[in-house]
Length: 167
Image 1 (spheres, rainbow, N blue to C red):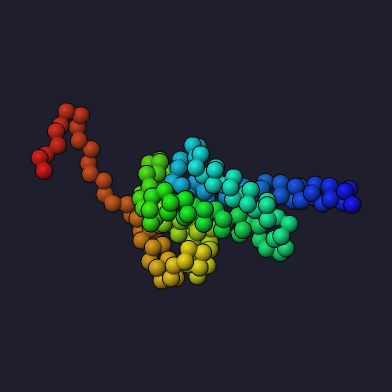
Image 2: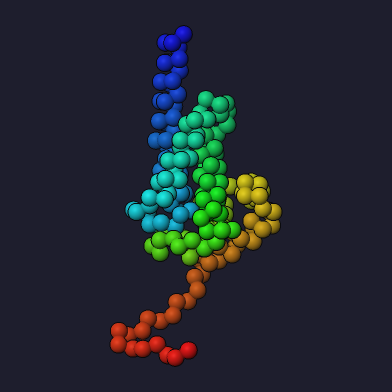
């Protein structure tokens, strides 16, 4: 009995290690996009990934035909949403790392953009995951895409000795 349990636990660990080896990089990239951190300095993204993988490992023996990647991605997204909600209010504007590729977006826009475009989650699935109408998800995704593709024109930099014009 004990030998069977040890063998089952060892097999579970090997399966999970193989899953992490295959999916860990993509999940980390998704988490980095969500947190809008720079790819080389991403402690919040790594924490999100660690929590998502720990939750997936805890549920590993109960997945029974469920996609473990989908499970980890879903937890990653909901954990990001809840953390952002509690820390900054109703998806308020957090202060992401300005070097992140999606730093100009709000946390909600980043979440929807990453789910829809990077992860390929259907609009209806993203809406159900976030508790929003599908039309709202569509509108937010369109706005976020436009913001990323056509950023607002930046004010020209002033010369070093120039003073700002009075307001």
